[in-house]
Image (tube, rainbow, N blue to C red):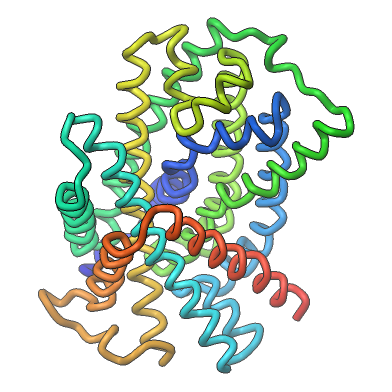
Length: 364
């Protein structure tokens, strides 16, 4: 990748927000309402607190260890170079690869019905290959180009969500959004908060761009905290609008389309179009940031000897070969596996890496 000017605080926050407010925000409310009921906003608050606890470690270490390897560099410092460290490093890189495949599958799933093209194996493969090729080409132009595009994609996505939030508050029924803290509902609240915890995990990508960030010792910790608080506010507002405009049974039945259906009272059929466009921009921003982070990790792993040396060779217009291998492997996963299988692998990998292993470093 070409390297040029450093990323500003706003651009690196955009990358984290773009990853956190990804496609899941448009599909998670059906499951969340089934588990947490009217305590959905409170579940997002609680999961955000969990994320802040984990983020504390990232912020402290990220402000001291400046490396695009991010948590991998943290593990190297804390646990030393060993087989365990190498295995954990490979696992983290694979979570990025799997995330890429999940995003492109989601993009094809939203785009094809929206433009009235039948979802066949061929058409899905064409969309998946095209969108990966586009964002891989963008990453070739370096961190500044990625950051600028990410900022505008996230700005568009958040503008769409703001329309949903502002319009929703005009018709919200506050009785429907009233929390319920009896024993059964509290249990659902806690269970949902654990699931939603993973929706905040995009902040870790900030540390995978630390070498490309302006004044990283100050801006890395700041970007981590800003992105989490910002995303928490959006999650809370969106969940309030959803449960305040749509009954719980309707949200549960709607599943992935809960936000689109919740928008009907104040946006009508236009709500479906708006939410679909928002979903496409959300997936795009998450994919853009994930390819960037995954390529940085692949290069860092090669430098540390955790991956074969050809990952760090300068080839093809002086780009990093790891970028192409990361994106290409993501496409292979998307073409070979179905969406549920990819999601299961991604969830397990993220939980194992981001939660269990950072806690080991803290104990060390």
